[in-house]
Image 1 (cartoon, protein in one colour):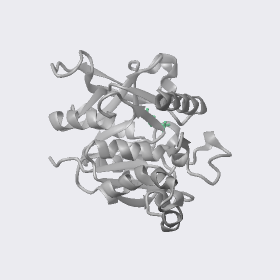
Image 2 (cartoon, rainbow, N blue to C red; image 1 turned 30 degrees about the horizontal axis):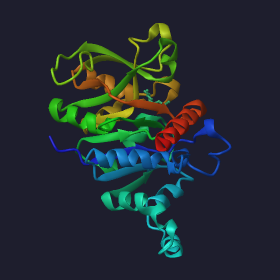
Image 3 (cartoon, rainbow, N blue to C red; image 1 turned 180 degrees about the horizontal axis):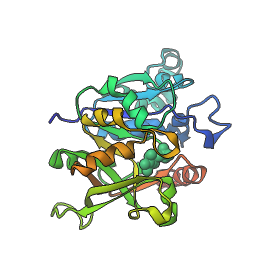
Length: 281
Ligand code: G1P
């Protein structure tokens, strides 16, 4: 199977939990310190060796395209001043990869957003990053860790973390059989055989929740085309992945690192404080 080169960023959602901030600004552009959430995700993908960022946008998301582009006026204004280095990081992101965009015309769920991205991905495996799950890892980024697993197992990979069971309603929850692999901590890899989107705690198959990092093989598109609306009347990637799991093609990975739910105000504030303390240290 091909080497991973592309990363899909579903970024068409409304971000209603952050209104009124997200009335005219996409939620993916909200900054943690001085950097938009989406840029953290793109940097993580670049670190993992991915070269093409495929972004599924929607109405009102033009600032995403402008962010990952040169602003000649701004560059001209600050050229030769001490402010020039504020742009160094974003400039190196722009130089390290290419961006492609498509629009999700109707909001029919994460599965539908991923299927909308097929035109940008084609017939190859790809990473998926939900930018509002912001991750920080000591050594390798989550996607880098997952690419290594994909290269060994050649199947879909989902990142999971342990959650208190009462929070199951916020996540896709998986269960399966632990894979014995000497290269990983005991219990870090699970061959998934069940997954449920946002179950009630009593219906959750375990306490392992999917966070917004996936590696998917292109056969997921065929499955998504046949996936009926599930939880919330939306086409769920969790339901499509369950079909792949039934034939043994999904591995869940308890990643090494911290993750912040920047889709919630609490998680966003926590991430901001964490990254602020980190730069002070
Ligand atoms: C999505 C997925 C869910 C996953 C979560 C991770 O839900 O549908 O399975 O656990 O992302 O953040 P959302 O947060 O978009 O409602």
